[in-house]
Every structure is written in structure tokens, then in C-alpha cells.
Image 1: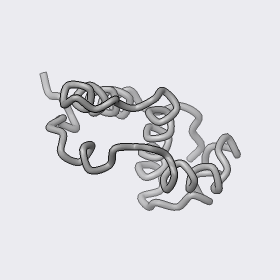
Image 2: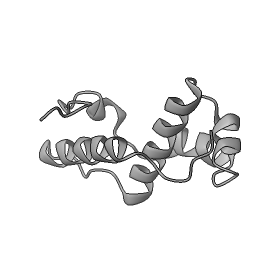
Image 3: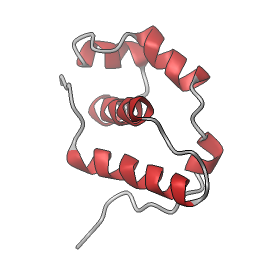
Length: 93
């Protein structure tokens, strides 16, 4: 499965997480961090595993595996605070 943009519910979820982070007094996520998280979630959803190399192939080399790994390890993403947010994954009307 090839992809170059995320599904709307993934983008909405990441936006909700970002809004919760800001509401908690954190600086929030940059646009690049939000884009990367959406991309990573699309990769996990499409391949059912977390594999940087497979994400690179599925995105038609849009992101290299090294760049994905660097963002995960070195970016200043507030992981602890992200996992403490109360954002529902799927909003049901």
C-alpha cells in the first residue's frame, strides 16, 4: 500500500493531541512533528508494524528510514505528556 498523505481521522487525532498538549501548558508539536506522527501512524496502519524501512518504501521514498528514526529519537517531542492526554481516537457523532 502506497501513501503520501494521512487519513483525515489520523490528522484529527494528532491535532487533538497537540491541542491537549497546549492546554496542559506544553509548547505543543511543530508542524513537522505533526506531519511525521501522521506519517508514522499511516505506516503502522498500512503495514501493521513499526518498520522505518517499510514506511520508506510505502511512501515512495518520501522519508528515508534514517530521517524517520532520527525524528523518533532526537526530536523534542514531549512523549510523556502525549501519552497522558485524553483525546479519543475515534469521535462518534
